[in-house]
Amino acid sequence: MTATHAPVPTAADSGSSATERFKADKSGNVANTSPERVDLLVREVLSAVHDTIRRHKVSYAEYNALKAWLIDVGETGEWPLFLDVWVEHVVEEVATEHREGNKGTIEGPYYVPGAPERGSRGSVPMREDEPGTPLLWTGRVTSTDGQPLEGAKIELWHADAEGLYSQFAPGIPEWNLRGTFSVEPDGSFEITTVRPAPYMIPTDGACGRLIAAAGWHPWRPAHLHVKVSAPGHEQLTAQLYFPGDQHNEDDVASAVKPELILDPKPSGDGKGETVVYDFALDPVRG
Ligand code: DHB
Ligand code: FE
Image (cartoon, rainbow, N blue to C red; front, side, top):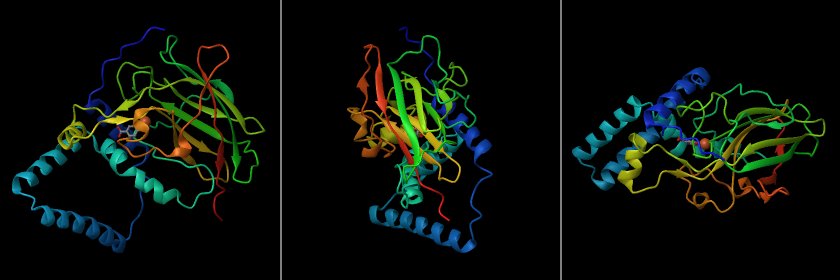
């Protein structure tokens, strides 16, 4: 297979696209938080910052470095990247701790609603010479009691074999590796895609500079993103990972859970891999 060499996306490319995406889909859907709660939460966060400054005797030069960095994050649109890497995993943990069905994890900044519909057995949209190991994924969507959820929908999106996401890196067809799938009456589905590559946080922007300044690394393990929904059930947002990826243990976004690691097998034709992974969704609590 031929590799396509898309230009490497800059932090500003990914950041500004992620910021526009967030504004379009989610900024109208925010909590109407009471003054009491805003007061409580903001006071606690500021108090933690004040304690850190006192404990470590933070200097004016360090304070100015922080100010310059925060201004930069905003100017290049990197707030969605920063928040989804270093904060979202705890919001997800709190939001889903009551669930009995499948574990989920962070959504990240690169979900786009409305990906092309591909039925219950089909291929995600991809280029004719799409690089990467073919992956055939079969599974079922049920409720936590085991009943098949006939009306279920699976939205799948992921990076390509170079770690790049369509609509956020330049030079990739609009809906590449983004698709919406349905299920059969018994809850089953069969999706053809390719294995994504590990994802690197862009290193040329403010988040990259933080990572370098702190001596961290910029990697997320290879992952498939999914949103699984069905009438009367809580939507599951998850990511699925591949065994043996060196960043399953030190994901920069802290989003890997053991239940989310797939177990792919070589396929019979020797050209790719097959994997089985099912979803059980929690009924909406009455
Ligand atoms: C980021 C990118 C991802 O692909 C992801 O799944 C989570 C976070 C990011 O760059 O912030
Ligand atoms: Fe991702």
